[in-house]
Length: 205
Picture: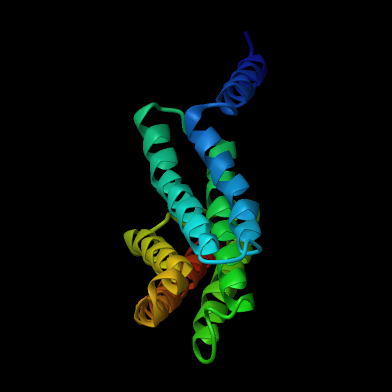
């Protein structure tokens, strides 16, 4: 067997493995998180306090899957290119959809809208940077602070989703958490751009 034949055989094996993992439990959890986005958005069109409980329950359930899909993929050696691609997309769709609804329906108001803008802008900018670096075959690993950022964002949004059903004081707590999330988001965004620039400079050297 020539080196070319061995390479083709290995590529075929990898493609077959990717296809077999497409319906693995970790990927199914990620699909579920994506499907939860229109459900969360749609719940805002239900009248009464029920909307907040439905949105909160859907959001928290989807957020929990963010931990389990990655954990199970690593524990069961079911990590896949599809999962690595869809996982951050699912996170950003869930966060962006929730933020936009919270702003549109007047739960996030006044200066706190800027916290939402900061979070949305950072997520879009970092996604663009990821695509650019990927085209250069440069990979920047996810830092522990970035994982904390996601957790803080999810917590803030969960509180804001249920807050109107519990009272103004809970809304204020949610807005404080949102600003904390925005601050951590800025820090991780800066770290990511700095790491990306360092990789580019190292490649050019």
